[in-house]
Length: 101
Image 1 (cartoon, rainbow, N blue to C red):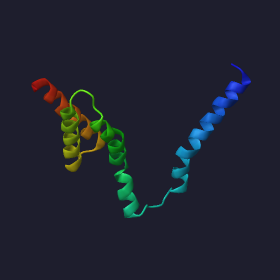
Image 2: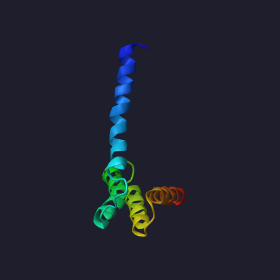
Image 3: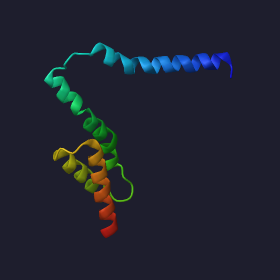
């Protein structure tokens, strides 16, 4: 392997390691305000919604699949399930829906 390639890989490792390590160093022993904790707790749901919600409107086969999957995901999230259970719940409901209908 060329020296330039090794240096490039090492530089990429440092650049990706710093943003991951920095919060641990900066916030060691400190407590975040409750508002910030609440916001950070909802980030996975917001990200999931931003990634999946547009697909509900652009599904090609049958619009009802998008509506059923979104309703299942919203229901699971409303009941307080974590992100993995929301995804698994929507997949389970859509699997059952496609099997029976």
